[in-house]
Length: 89
Image (cartoon, rainbow, N blue to C red):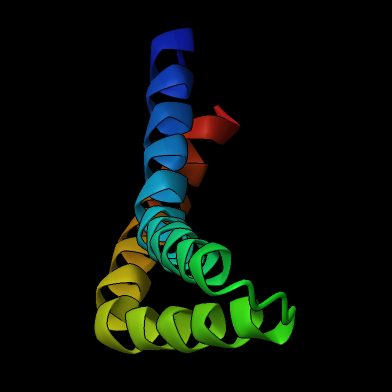
């Protein structure tokens, strides 16, 4: 196995991480920003007010995109397992 192939596997792994974590992090960031703006305008400083909406949105994103995320991760894992004999040489 050459350095180029190892680099390609690592690049695909990093892309998978972004693909899996991106929607969750972006949705939590947007909800956190909206809640922070609402808290600043209404002067409500309740800590659970930021936590609960983020958790709800993250669960919704997982419910919507979970199947896609799981199949993408499964395809990558299967590809890695198929390459194991090549790596052993």
